[in-house]
Length: 240
Image (cartoon, rainbow, N blue to C red; front, side, top):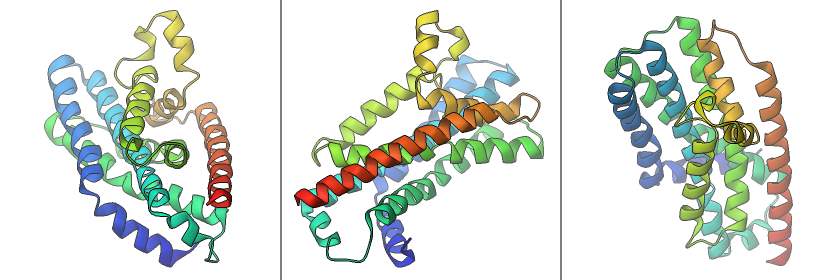
């Protein structure tokens, strides 16, 4: 892992105001709209909405960060990287870690809005576990963002990322609880990484326990997507 490269990339990512603002403000507004209007005074529903929207923000930031890769490919940056000591594995790792860094802000803002605007009350342990769960659960989506960055074209990567992100959020139960879906959609939901991210992030709300099965499934998704991302990097640089 190259710390200098990570620092430069982090500065560049946070200068992308569209990604930062959209991934931060959108979930915060949805918390107020859905949690404040749709669920009424149901305290448990407000907790569900707050954690789900925090996760959605982290997912959005993680997937959107892959758009920089498509831009770099369009500018020929991948050819330049071949001349540096940066290995393919280090490049992919840097991109994934940077996506996680960007994902912190949406979770923080959404939790603040939930606590201040919806009066969500959790124990200290639940706040910490839900925060860590919502943030780190975006890990497979950081790897997915890298994959999208290598498959999509620079002029379409944002649209592709947004479509995939919204689809995964919908089918994964972030908008509507999976328990309320028809049987077929419930089955489809469990095939998506977003379902398991929700299980990890919201499980502390159920007595403060951790869903270990969901964590293992997410690690599997992350590993598979990271391998695909690494392969795409090698294919792309070899072709450049």
